[in-house]
Amino acid sequence: MKDYEMVIGLEVHCELSTESKIFCGCTTKFGGAPNTHVCEVCSGMPGTLPTLNKQVVEFAVKAGLALNCDITRNNKFDRKNYFYPDLPKAYQISQLYCPICRNGHVDIKTSNGTKSIGIHEIHMEEDAGKLVHDEATGMTRVDFNRCGVPLLEIVSEPDFRSAEEVIAYLTKIRDTMQYLGVSDCKMQEGSMRADVNLSVRPRGQEEFGTRTEMKNIASFKAIERAIEYECERQIDLIEGGGKVVQETRRWDDEKEYTYAMRSKEDAQDYKYFPDPDLMPVVISEEYLESIKAILPEFADAKRERYVSELGLTEYDADIITGNVTLVKVFETSGAKCGNYKDAANWILTDLLKLYKDEGVTPEDKEFDGDKLGTIITMVNDGKINRKSGKKILTAVFEEDVDPQEYADKNGLAQVSDASAIEPAIKKVIESNEKAVSEYLAGNEKNIQFLIGQSMRELRGKADPKTVKDILEKLLSEMK
Ligand code: ADP
Ligand code: MG
Ligand code: ZN
Image (cartoon, rainbow, N blue to C red; front, side):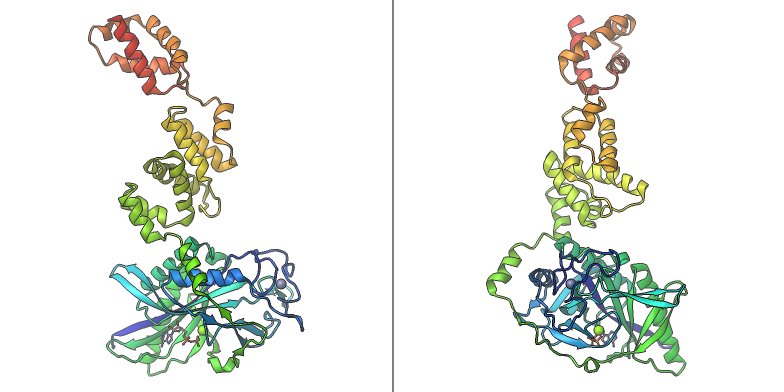
C-alpha cells in the first residue's frame, strides 16, 4: 500500500456575541421559547429591509487583525440563494466577492513544533434558523430564533496535515475570539462550528486529491475521530480502485462513521449576486486605527509577561492564560491585593478545586476577582488566617457573599491588636508555670506548646506569628 498524506482545510463559524442580530434589533440570546426572538426582518417578510449592525463590522475587523489578515477597505454583501425551510428569505446574506478579511495566518504549536496556517478569508454572514424534528409525531417544526444571528466564517487554506494540527488551530481560534470578546465559542451551544474538508494524496504528490466536507461537527473529540475515520475511508476507497466523490458527509458520533448527505454544490449553484438592499461597507483609515488601538493582549504575550514580569512559573501561566475567564480573575485579584504570585496560588490550588468539585467551568460560574483580591489582602494583612480565607472563598463561590461582611458575621476576624492578645497570653503564661520555667532554663522547644495554648485561648482567631512575637517579648521580660 502506498503511503498517504491527509490534507485538510477548515471552515469555522463563530456566532458573534453582539446584543442584537446582524440586520435587525432582535436579541441574539441563546435559547428562548421558539419564535420569540423574531421580527418581520429576520423572519423574511416581503418588503422589509436589512439594517447592518455596526458592531458586527467592529467584531469582524478585530478578528481579522488578530488573525493577521488584510482588511478589505471596501467590502460588501452578497446573496447566496437557496431554499431551505429554516431560511425564510430563501437566500442568506453573506460575502462572496469581497469578504471583509483576507490573507491571514495563525501560528500553531504541535508536537512537531510551530507551524503557520493560512487563512484564506473571513466573511460576515447571517445564521439560519433551526429545524426541530419531533420523533413522536413524525413532524418537523421550525424555530427562527437563530435566524439573523451574526456569524463570522473563517476559511483556512488547505494547510493541515494531521488531526493534531486541526485541534491546535481550533483551540487558538477559540482563545483568540474569547480574548477579543467577540464570540464565546461554545461548541456545545453551537456558537462555534467547524466544517472539515478532507482529501488524501500519495505522499510526495503535489496535486490535491478530491475532498469531502464534513459539516458542523460538535466537539473537538468528535472532530478528531471524524478525521481519522474519513481519512481511512478515502484511502481504502482509492486502494480498492474506487474514486472519492466530492460531497458533503455527515459524521455520526455514536456509530462513528460518515455517510453521504448531498453532493457538493459549487459557488455557481447558489447564483450569488450583490445584495441590492445593503450599501458597501467602507472602512476608513481612522476607524481601522481606532480598532487596532483597542486590541487586547493575547494569550501568548500574556503568558510571557506573567513569567517574566509577575514571576509565575510557566506551568501556572499556561493554565491561567488557557482560559480567558481565569485571566480576568487573576488580573483583577492580583491588582487588588498587589501580589500576583499569591493570586495565582489561590486560583490554581483553591479556586480551581472548587470548580472541579462542582463539575463546572469558570465560564459557567464567573468568580469575582475583586473579591478574591479582598480575601488575599485580608489574609496577607493578618486580619484572618488562611483557613478562614478558604472558608470565605467557598462562601463567595457558592453564594457570592461579601468577604468582609461574611468574616464579621462568622467571627472569622483574627485578633490582631496586641492589647487584645496580651491578656490571653499572660493568662497562658500564668497557668503553665512548668513549661515557662523550662523555656526560661533553655528548653526553646516549649515555645510551640505555649503558642498552641495561646491560640486555643484565642479560639484560633489570632495570627500565630503575632502570638509568637508577643509571647517571646513577654517571656524575655521574665528572664
Ligand atoms: P467551498 O466554498 O465550495 O466550500 P472552497 O474552495 O472555498 O470551497 O474551500 C473550502 C475549504 O476547503 C477551504 O478551507 C479549503 O482550504 C478546503 N479545501 C479546498 N480544497 C481542498 C482539498 N483538495 N483537500 C482538502 N481541503 C480542501
Ligand atoms: Mg464552503
Ligand atoms: Zn428580527
